[in-house]
Length: 268
Image: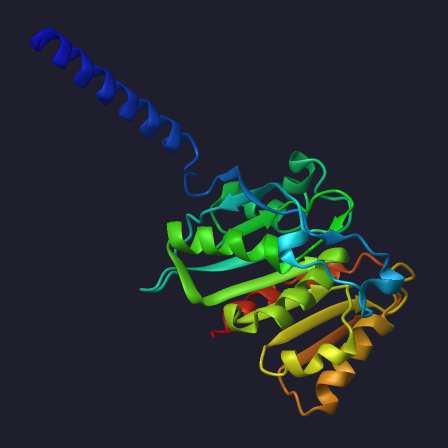
């Protein structure tokens, strides 16, 4: 009887150790990115740039099928921006088709910047989800990831930022309009938004970027929502247009680091 009890205790301890070890494999070391995932709605159907910022049919979250949403998570070594509340968090939304291969996603945009210098200089907790193919960004995909990360890691809830490129630029405008209380600031690049959503964006600091020669997502997409915000008295939006630049305004937006210094200066 004693031997049986001891064997049961040993098995329980062994199982707990295995679970702990498995859980430990998912914990990112500071300065390293790890690929995690969450089960969430697949998102809204993809729409072309010509129609993406226009009113259209929206599926209710209960109607969206669930899927596994991978996301890269980076925890900083650099504690220069850490406060008593925690680290600032930057959510990055990629463009159309960029999330099909998570390894490719890690090589572009914010994940690539976080990896620079061996991950030792990047001051943000960074979350970079992969949007399912044939879908576009939805709040029902993004917010559960933010909820999990802010619950499990030392995130300063007053310094949560979002930025995205192209489809991710549209997604940035979208999530700022749907959950303005969750973000201290946002930076949509070469995206767009229905000007009718301007009233939801009046109180959120936004710095938008666009190339004035962009023939993929026309610069008028950013100009229209910017003007709509200004027409309602909004003073927290700004727009930078790059002369002669096409759809690739990323390099100009991040070249001198001013965008990131501006983000870090914003607090909810």
